[in-house]
Amino acid sequence: MMACHRIAVGGIFTECNQFGGAPIDMRWFERYDLCRGEEILQLDSGVVGGMLQVLGEREVEVAPLLYAGTCPGGALTVDCYRQLKTELLERLRAALPMDGLLLPLHGAAVVEEIGDLEEDLLAAVRGMVGEELPVVATLDLHAHISEGMVRHADGLVAWETYPHRDAFSTGERGAKLLVDALDGRCRPTMAVAKVPVITSAIHASTDGDDPFARVMRFAKELEQEERVLSTSALLVHPYLDLRGMGSGGVVVTDGDMERAERLALEIASRYWDMRRELEPEMYTPREAIARGLENEEGLILLVETADCCGGGAAGDSVASLMALLEAGIEQPALVPVVDPEVAGICHRAGVGATVEVDLGHKVDPRWGEPIRVKGRVSGIGDGQFDYSGGIFAGTGGDMGPTAVLEVGSVQVLVTTHATYDWMDEQYRAMGLDPTAARFVVAKNPMNYRMAYGEIAGEIFILDTPGPTPATVRHFDFQKLERPFFPVDADMNEFRPVIYRGREAG
Image (cartoon, rainbow, N blue to C red; front, side):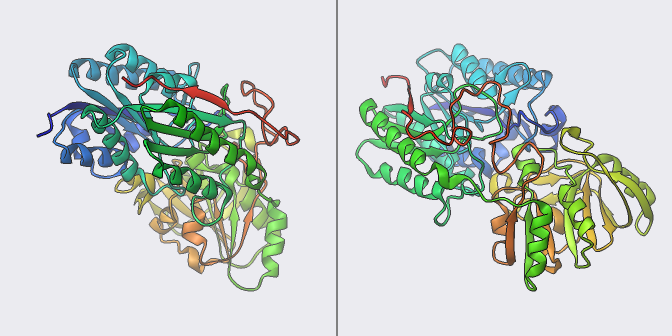
């Protein structure tokens, strides 16, 4: 019979944007997931649910620490991070001794004045538990993997699907790797290879024939090789500004560093070869609406990816709304806008009231000016909804006080808080049916395919101002080193950077 191990579980999970969005403070985590101690053991979905499933099956004693997860936004405030980090480390210290540690992380979180959250947290954890204790972390496939993260972890296991459907199974994979190592079944040995490709997620689905799908399939096929424990393909979150950013592969082998390096290089090389296919074709809102009106049938989807809450943007852009109003469309249209002030005005006025307001660009005013609109309040609500899948499956979303403002033929979903888009839960929570609309604005770069892919007559990727654009060619990076694609599009060759992990014991 296997010996019973004691494994601690805890982490901080979110994705950040260093070019826009509202700063993340403790209130953000309180609206989503903030579990302490035994509360963690009640989680049965997401990455933590997957971890607990395996640990239960393997009869492992779990030491639950702190798990804090929230919707993407700007950088974490220093006070927020210090509070979460201090509590996690205090709980970790109190749980010692233990046999191993599982950290459900994202990989693209940053802290004001500090920078890379995951590297800082992993370094602090390693400093507390010592060099011998095995540490495995799970990551989003949009993670920025630094050399420090590789140095402080024994294994990094990333999600395999985008849109993200495998948080639970990734938690299972991470837990299995750690427990197998503790049981003496393997000696995790890791290498990471990266190339300077910084692109958006427009062509980064793992379904179908998207270029990133081909890279991911290649990476997962390598798991069939002898002594390969895990492979991951990573498209780095492009809205960070950190040194050493890049996309590529992570390979964990059973004590075979040479094989781990070789296969990680092969993944990164495939990535480099497909880099040009990852850049999308874009349209101004005016162009997209004009082209859409030429199509007499089907829903016209306007993808305003530059204002993606799931990428850390504020969700307060009115670029698409302004273009729809200027075009004088008479067909039904749906547009989401985060504007706490206007949501409050609508709630105070009540259903049926007519209000005239300045809408948009108040949470993050760097990307545009509010527009003056007059409309009828056709609905109000508390903004609560349930996610039907994805990374927040099994949890509720909180838009805060929410209203539907009818401006001509356009129904504007006005929310107080930014929320991650999975399907069309936010619209439907307020009684809005996207299938009955002629134009729908979706503010995400990928999940729109699931919600609207089968019903959309045409889909247009918009070129609008915002911190999550479809290309980063025009971003003013301060820390990211040149050259990198697509800014230096004439690069013909680049030797991947290799990070070597801890030597297997």
